[in-house]
Image (tube, rainbow, N blue to C red):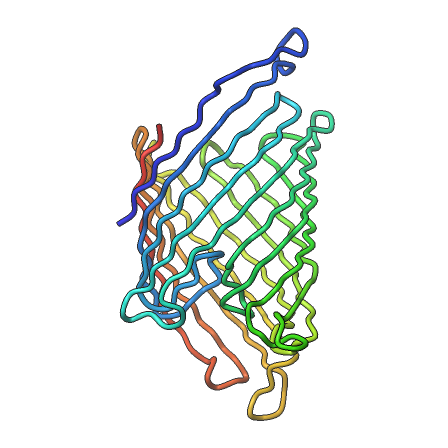
Length: 302
């Protein structure tokens, strides 16, 4: 079970001119969330990679400052993850994240976002203990409410706590990630999303380098006023140039991940359940596997 609480309220306002859209407001916010995950096979759920059973506690606090056209956001976020007896890998870990972002409207149809972010002790595809710094630029185009397109480019610089760098130091890695998204709005809480992603990390440590391409489609449909269902399908291909299989080839993995999510939001309550199944095919027999991943959250917003 998972419990979450969120707090967001304006506490101060400073007028920079008359009329709507010119009044600047300061909005602090906070969130706490508790949840569990049960998984036969780990998936790329960012910051919550669990193979087996585990629980997590997440705390978040920050502040937004802006008006209709400009939003500046500062955010601190921490996740405590505990893996239970059947889980593999590290028993527990804490992940910290700091984010600073600026969202700026460019006329009626365009919006640009600049974001800087730092992670401490992040679990990634290539390592169980990663520190990361990233800078991102996102451009959004929404000519009408029913159509929205986004493109984001992110530079990531990573440090791995592995002692496999020069003179026993940490390995280093860096690389680009490019995301493209199109959302078609059919009606209230009724969407179709298409997402594409290409990413890479290059490192002098051959165990840390990889490339990945992924594509996904999801469909969100309201069943009642408070209940929505969201089926989705994602396909991913990952190549590890420095991880050699018994046949002498670089390791390549292909994953097909169908999932369904239920979102029940009566009033201020937020109840969300997700079930997915991960089909993994690899030219490394040890990585040729499949399994489920289940998660549940129950929250309250005030």
